[in-house]
Length: 82
Image 1 (tube, rainbow, N blue to C red):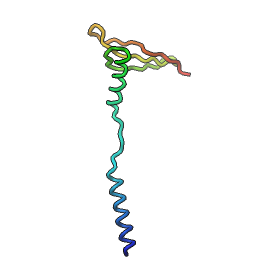
Image 2 (cartoon, rainbow, N blue to C red; image 1 turned 120 degrees about the vertical axis):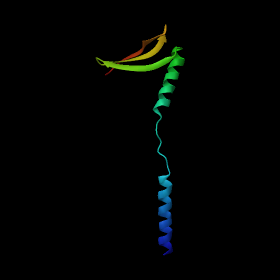
Image 3 (cartoon, helix red, strand yellow; image 1 turned 90 degrees about the horizontal axis):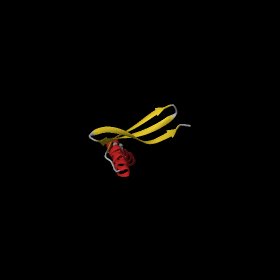
Image 4 (spheres, helix red, strand yellow; image 1 turned 180 degrees about the horizontal axis):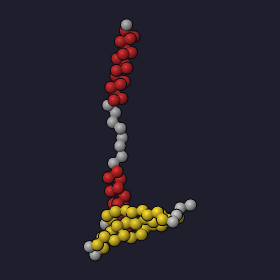
């Protein structure tokens, strides 16, 4: 009887401790802000967005910056897809 009671307490304790663990989730907004802040420091401009375009086996990456109170896109990289 004691073994059954001990086993039952152990099982209930294990289930409640596992149920209280919160799953880790990624914060997409935080990751995007970190990338845009890094690009702002590298290019010494305020980066508003990042855009990737794939066309004819080439990936082009653009950043959107303010220039003369207008949003303009500047090409920062171009890569060939193998």
